[in-house]
Length: 140
Image 1 (spheres, helix red, strand yellow):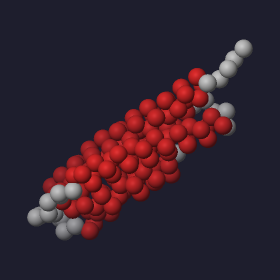
Image 2 (cartoon, one colour; image 1 turned 30 degrees about the vertical axis):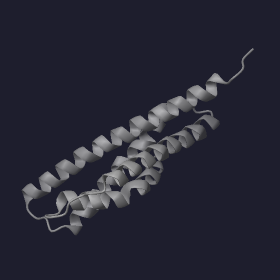
Image 3 (cartoon, rainbow, N blue to C red; image 1 turned 90 degrees about the vertical axis):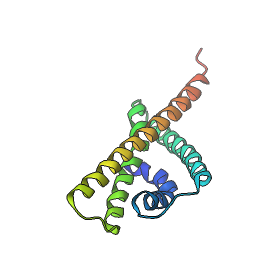
Image 4 (cartoon, one colour; image 1 turned 180 degrees about the horizontal axis):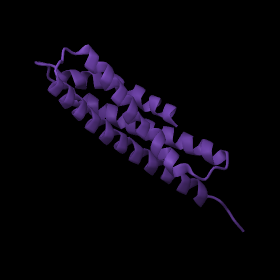
């Protein structure tokens, strides 16, 4: 389940570098909001596809507990973002306890929110998929 989050993270990690640089650097400004919108749209498509694949594999193995798997597989993207933010912290020149608390507090809040966003989107995509495949079953 946790490995499924690597695919959506691979979709956004380059853009995360530019966002982190603009947010945590002294005089960098982020200008490319249109490209960010395209990356978020691509991320949404990738999350729904990853969730559908995970649910399909579970339902093929006759495991009916697909809901938490669809949420967890996509929400694990937030965990990978947290690992990347730890890596990014070591590449900055931040020092001191308060900077550490502020950086990791902001990063943790962002990663939890992003993980919940991805998990909810994955759950809704998988729910739509399950509804679609079970509505086509002909039972007589």
